[in-house]
Length: 283
Image (cartoon, rainbow, N blue to C red):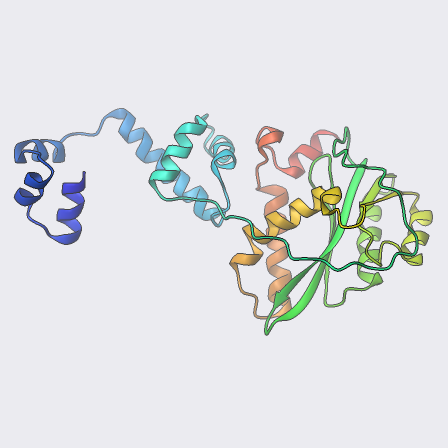
């Protein structure tokens, strides 16, 4: 009640406050000394749990993901509307993504057709992989680069490497690591037309491991939506919210986030399972 809050925080007179809001003093004191109902007690306990989960997620959980977090961590089925109401009352709002920076075009050597053609459905692991390179800043505006491969089936990060150089080695090592982790896999790997993916080295890697290639159309970043979506999540939920003094600090931070993403970030469309849990079901 506003009378209680203003009296506690500002020290205003109860009598004057009651008169201002047209409430009798007896009604106010009756409300003040009432016993909370069972429903109120349950809401208070749930609110405390939601606050704890929200803090542990570093503030990235929205309503849908919070609903699954409550189910997974408290074994309690909660209506989305109730979660939304409680989060609003506590002022809990998930991080909003920042706009992705503009990318520059590169000159292609070996070009593949866009065989994926925005068909982002996969019926099993290692069927459709998506890969890209993004940049990260640390220290005194020094730049690092992260190359990653995501599996569209379960949104797992199959491999990733962080480097201070955006060169062919970064991309080739990322693909090699992904294939070494999945030696029987023969996926379609979709990328943009960046110079690493159109290079002779990448073409040779394709022949070595027997994967197929697919490439986005020029200036159509949504053709590579799965990995673009991951960059958006990683940067909004972690990278933009921290400062990194050193290169090692950056690497350790991204390592921690990807561990969280794989093993603790509940996915609503997977019925609240994490990417690693959903992937394990198919093994």
